[in-house]
Image (cartoon, rainbow, N blue to C red; front, side, top):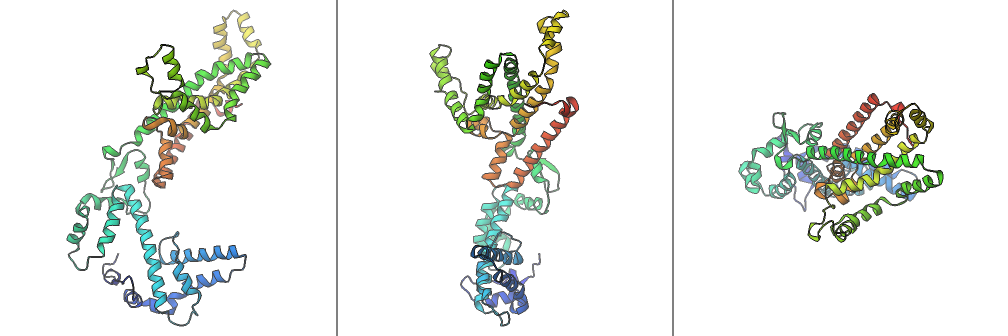
Length: 427
């Protein structure tokens, strides 16, 4: 940054004239050669041969190319410059209308760049966006020094050293700050890693909650799926086919419909509480809170992910000959001992496949927690979706997604070392 640059002192009137102030900032704008690269962008787009729709798209792309040539922005269009350059003969000196178009397009790009920059700064320290927007309007009124007092008068936060220190943390084009933020940490002014303020510490808790919920859901699915899969594998064919239809039926129903059905059943005035109250198990004043909390999220996710545990285990059990159990009992083993020593070890590949499948799906789930979980059932997947769709903090969302992917790959590696991927069997 050069404080002696004339651009800091020259004020361009909003209603013109534009040519003289722009030439004071940089006299090169008065030369034909300076405008030639912009003119080539325009004329190259005009020479394109294709359909009307294709020509419109190429001309629109040229407007973006002009703006990216003049500014760091790649998503802003200089439509006014494109319009005046279309009719330029590339020989005569540009007149006032060229400078007006230049000023208007660069002013629009500057506002866009300011908004983009203030949004990024807001990720580092909340309040930056409002600070920049308010100051940008007030700075136009500052004519002469001292500037410090004038800036603080416009917005007192400019006198806060923490505001200036947060700028230091954002000076580098590449940073690991998003990964630190994903674990409630950040860099201080000396590039030391410190904890976020207490009111902003939320992600570590969400990581532990996500891991805990995934484990509970996986164990719950295993406890329900194992006897169900054993029943499917041992029942006569006509009965097992009927039971298999019941297992597969959720796949034929929309996930959203199933979640809404659970919401109707689990609410305090829902079916489950009404049955418990009518049966005298609960009083009307002590209805169970099973919606918009951790409990409701666990119940619904177990039901949704249960088929993913049943099918791998069933496929393995179906391949175990019944004669193995009979042989073990003929050799003196009790039915329970034969089951534990002979039958269950052979089902481990199916158990492993079901466990890793359910756990990986559960650890990244966000639809069910979003609808059923409330504030106590939010998971890390919900925060990734929030930053992608609402806060537009894509850097933090990408960092959390990368950490989540890395954690899954580590768990997959651990599973391979303990059980072995070659022993995995899916349905």
